Image: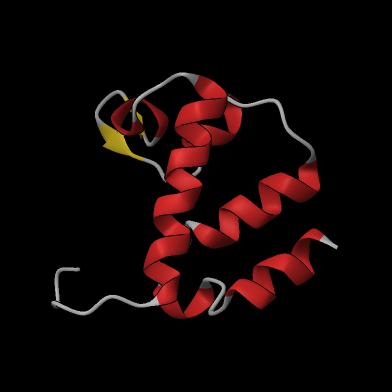
Length: 80
């Protein structure tokens, strides 16, 4: 978004954040920071889900967009 371009991996990031908010009842700043320090893995302490689901969400939240899923088919394959 900062570059004015949107790709599927941007939507997957937003979907993962939305999922975590719904599962935890916490807002994104609470999920991704520890005493004010940004920590993208902080959320893993706040949700009780399977390791496989955590791995899928973690990939959707990767810092580098190229490391995220690039298509809905990839995400669906991960759930299989």
